[in-house]
Image (tube, rainbow, N blue to C red):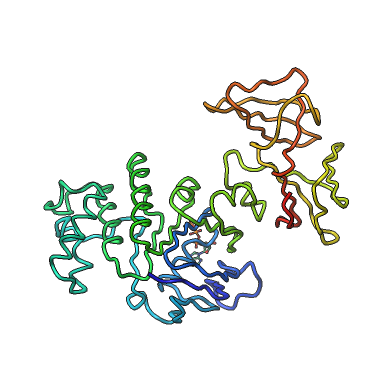
Length: 356
Ligand code: ATP
């Protein structure tokens, strides 16, 4: 397995890019550690596949270098990068049995047959196709074929990295959950460097140690699920992670005072904000306290989502979401306060330092 260094990577599909908008990837400069499980998460068109293809060698970046364990592989084709890949749709040999499909990447590299057998049996159980080992792949369902694809990606233990591009799209929801947990287990067991592209936050948060959130051709945050939840670096992360997403409210900052409409909130630090920047306050719905203290709110709607309720309310002229327990009481004259430790301040969409 390998550490992956992405050095000042930029990519434009068109000739002669003139401005930032012409780049599908604006600037990616990060080190991904050996044995890390990373999920690339972001909306359609943000550049996830472009970045994955640059790592795999399917695409050459317009600018920058990519290194595996310090070795520059930017100009190497995919075959010479020693990686395994799993795509959205199955890539398998229809005329071979399930067993032979899984054995293929190992036999191809002249692995002794006893080791092939041990490894294939292990993987075939993991993907739940033990009973199908001797069946030809041709007759299998799309779901089963994709499991073979996954298995083929996981069967070699000597690869630099395993890259997954939305691999569970064709898998049924129950099996999805199972395969995701098994991938995680396998990662813990073998310490593969894994990069997993998805636009599904549940998939990313359950699979990865580190989630790489992309937005409009940029990485806006790399963090653990807890970091993304508690300290979103960019308002997009706050909005994209969590359900409902973070409340992002326009705010005027004066020293350590934040003013939203008629409401003043005292911060525990004075954020350093450049003159003229657009300032916003971020507070997750889970950290808005509904009770008899604080700023009066007008409740517009209450959604019951099982163990919790989402209260939609108007707060100083802004819409906010509040999450309360299923049996949480709603006072006749409701007011809210914000948990000060959970308040984040943003300038031009980026979080301003300080912890509160
Ligand atoms: P999705 O989840 O829809 O696959 P993505 O996050 O993987 O999206 P990319 O496929 O990397 O995003 O696309 C990033 C941007 O680059 C998009 O604006 C897309 O239209 C553009 N793009 C992707 N491939 C090409 C191509 N071959 N030629 C020109 N533009 C492309």
